[in-house]
Length: 134
Image 1 (tube, rainbow, N blue to C red):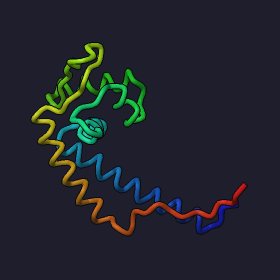
Image 2 (image 1 turned 135 degrees about the vertical axis):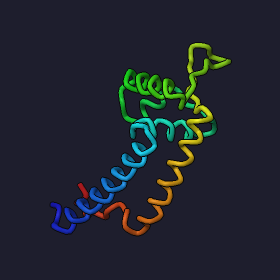
Image 3 (image 1 turned 90 degrees about the vertical axis):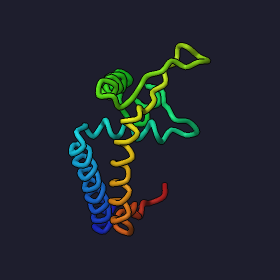
């Protein structure tokens, strides 16, 4: 059974997480983009061992349905933030790359996010909750 301190720890963690999320939303909107567009660019840049991602990978990383990821990529492409490129080896696969202007915008936003995370050091921690073992 969870105790009062467990609920307090969960509530504090959720509060800090929401504060950071709200900061992120406002930072993106101040740059003229939607928060999901920032997250899409971040996932492209953060792809392991390469500078692009597939729509399927983006859907998974953003936890959205594939058709929602396609629509998000299309909106970012219309804004000049990303570019679609056909894979040279598997021509059925489409790679999503950051455009130079998308890269520049992402650098600005990621720097702000990094500074905000540093300011939360020691505050933004995963709560330790005592759960009974089965």
